[in-house]
Image 1: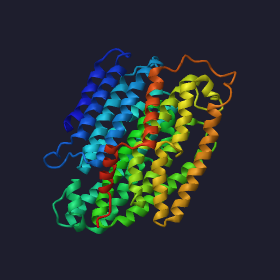
Image 2: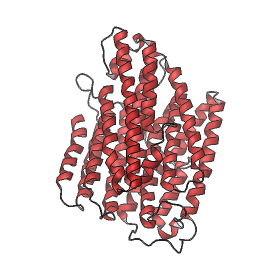
Image 3: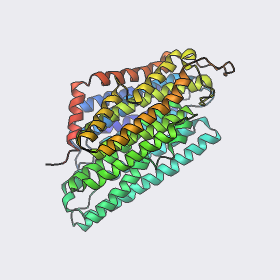
Length: 477
């Protein structure tokens, strides 16, 4: 079953490449995405044992990220049928193939327990998404693509150096050299402390760049701003979670070495810096897709702070993987609809979206309410769990900065979102062919319903999964 998770999207990519008809490719993409989701549900429900040698294993942490990624990808694949209908001026072969290759690599990240293999899979997601950012084929999109490739590749290269240091620490300790997660956790107490600290620094910077933690986030505003909405949804709600999973693997090793305090403090500092950066740059943001990029910087900061706090905040961080990923899908897909209708991302031109596009405008407004941590949506549960944990632990300064940043970000987003969706459509607004349809509105509406459901009720199987995952990240007694 592990092989099917990886190979099926690659088969889909080959089939999609060979199809000569633009109208048919998104439908084939959706079929393979649906099959992948079916395999994901089966693997989570009936998880097979680890592969011989321990290279592949789907533990509770991998299950959460795989579930979030698969649901988001399926929703974006269905959305692509309606979205690409309005982009008939361009061939969709590259975007459909690239999405499936990325899905294969993303799946490999979730099941890889060899850190070298996980690194290869993460780099593959970076490379496969780059041509999709360039979909609009203009000067700004190619600039965004090169910035994304350059900065993320440098970050992943730094992570590779961290893996070299980690491997060398096993040689210095005179234990069997290995990058298998289970071996590193088993031998963690014997590893050279100096080399392990050096490895952790490079891994945090490397994977933090891929996540978009400030000040390593500079690729995000351009990439998210120029990519199509469905690509932005996968970048913000999917690839961010994969990089966070890589940090969770590093965290597991840190726990086993008893050197966790150093790593936790670094996470809290970088997380708070990310939230402060987002708060500063969110205010009066004229490009609403760049605004969503800074929202992503905020939320990776929230996850980093939660991981650094430990304790009950770990549960909040893991739940935030789902809450943030699904909510970002609502925002990016509905913002893509608004962009298509107005043919502009500038808030000076986009006004009265609720009148022009009642469904997309309403979804964007609801997504804003959800992503800012307002009840009764899922992000409220995760963010409340995190900030309450900070105060319970006596980390008053951390909790205060956290709350102040959330407040400033809420006001900053409101100053952009509310004028967009309220009021009258400008009389000189460009008339376009876009109209809301079931295929462009249904997918983000489905995600919004999930975000609402998780905000009022967490199903027992999911609660068990989150608890099992939290147990893997608890300090040993």
